[in-house]
Length: 106
Image 1 (cartoon, rainbow, N blue to C red):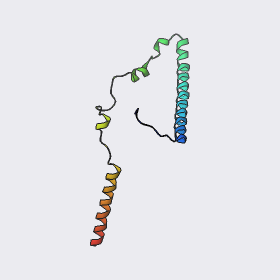
Image 2 (cartoon, one colour):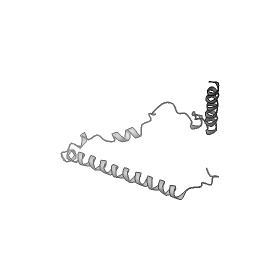
Image 3 (tube, rainbow, N blue to C red):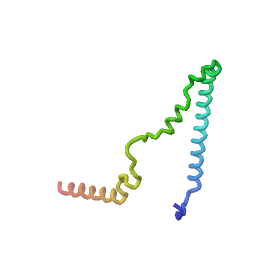
Image 4 (cartoon, rainbow, N blue to C red):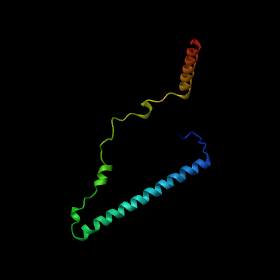
């Protein structure tokens, strides 16, 4: 997209930035809370010397898995698309003509 001169509405642009900042803040708060919960749950085990019974890196193994979620990958340009606006417009225009002609017959 190097040769495209994007025209952006400044109000919308700021709204999008604000939205992503809010999302980032929300997720950082949730991450901090979960990290603190894990720490507080693991602390008694560590103090009692049972730290070897604490499961390690189970979440990371899910993220690093080579398993594909879903079926075979299909390139985006070969995926099915919806009709264009013009095609839908012509379809509805033809449908209306058919309904009108059916009413004229009655």
